[in-house]
Length: 447
Image 1 (cartoon, rainbow, N blue to C red):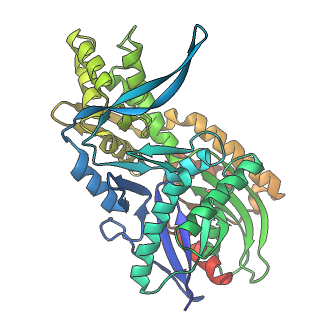
Image 2: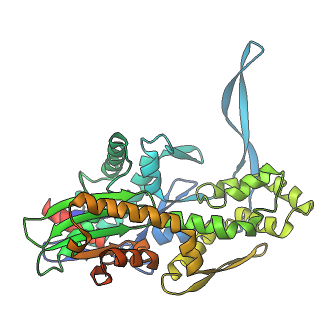
Image 3: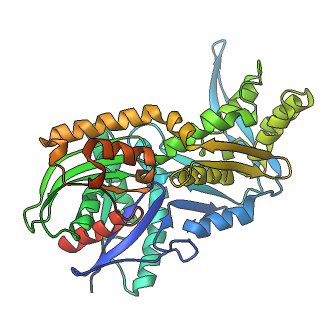
């Protein structure tokens, strides 16, 4: 029997679901995760090019990398053409390479897809002897997810409805290019047929199952990578109406970066290091998850050692050195994200990271967090009101506001929605699985 699934390829988390027209089954594809139906969108590529995803990828990364031994060797990286004094010649380039590096951990693959595929920003990355395009990285992740789903179902999967944001990019041509890169990655992963549905529309289809009468519904889909908004008329079989959609390139990962920039960089020497651009560059790279793991070079270590020996903020620069060279970056970012999540339930939290050469802690309150992201809140409210205006409806004509995605639970945004539409209309859907389930519903309708 041909099987068509719904697949939510998310910035932070992904999932797969199957509908039979009566009920939706979200597949438990990551038994090592706290929520097995949620697979973290993380890819670990080993030196021999094996691919691992989800919690397994994280655990292998920790096992292979944290506090490991390094050995650097000079390797030929290529040749460059030099023109000097009208003499044209080729010059060999050698770089110091950590030959004991066991693998690389990658996350925010969807962000790379959104900002890189066709956008001229990030086209891929070099891993060991091989260059991976963004499409190849996405294919590796989708292929592993498809294999897990087939093992769970005991049957091959032939077709998929993939979720996509309302906008990959503002430019229609670039938006189309990113969608086509995702389509080709899915085809290369083994799906014979691929179609798409907007992620907030999928969340709306899932919510529609709860309705006893028609409603005008606003979907506020706020995840790790984007905010998408859709306004629809739901609850009348065959008479769904799509009023308007909108979105903005702001989401949870931006808040993590903001916390680091505004509250945590002083722990690594920010503001205390002067006239040493080589050190300042390292400090300013701390908020960038993709860059930081690649800074563990002999040159960076020598520069940090010299500054520490010169007693330039030695305690804080030792924190920075440990963060980079003890492979603590992933743990650090996890602590920041966990603190952000905790502030949705409590008034204050502690961000802490402790090791043999690092001891960092910062008390962080919800009030500080809300002040830190106030500019983002204003931008989001502006886009929200623009989308409502484009729908032709007044806020009072919206019957329900459905929140989905992890960032939608941040109290500041729940309060914003309540102030505009009325707190009684704001409803929380399943933060991690409503889009996945809605994609399965669409997959059944289009099978």
